[in-house]
Length: 305
Image (cartoon, rainbow, N blue to C red; front, side, top):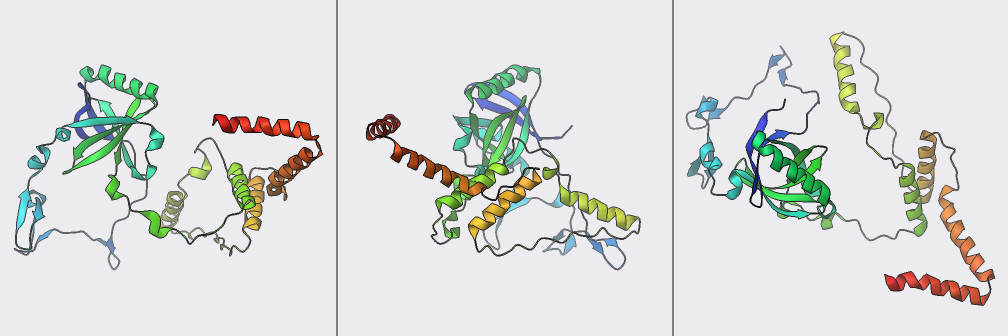
């Protein structure tokens, strides 16, 4: 069972939901340490006091704010936990918003909120079901690790999840990264949409979403343990220079179809254009009265919109 990171309550108006915060994710990456290559002795980081020039223990170390180079204001963990904030002991829900109104770049790591004791069971279930039925997420404030944070509460299966969120001023303006103005043709856009359609799927399960890096690293470590030759690395494909965007899109669609076991159609990206041309020709061949009727019918949705 994961350890409790924080305990307090969710504040929902006058409703209080005692809860425990636990990590919702696990790190399965292979971890490395630093070693002295000559004798493989472990390299460790030691904490040394600059004034006394000696190593100090964790019990002697505390936090401080450097006001000037010669003046440091000490701050204790107890003082941080007793901050004069309503969010110091509670996750204060401020508003409920549609999930698609929150820019994903602002959403960070996730935590499970578990009801703390039998008294929390009913209000916890009430909040979870209300979030489910409203199809909204809750935006809340809470204070951890010496700072007030913004959070997002949503439902995952039978559990309420708290996502840390970044404040608006923590998101950098991307305008300076934009490329110079360019024109994209309708055919190129249709080609990109055709490629997206071929690469679409309903879930993120399967071999395509396995951690290949960790698997490859495990094979290398096992080979070295058994003193066997290391597995050969596949030759990476060298990206070619894109000279013809439509040709690259067409080839990409063909490869995507082949990977799904479908017959590749070289002219797949030209189909939307052919259909449009056929519709225009049909309209010209029809009598003027019928054409006018069709045009009138076509204008009705635009008026209602």
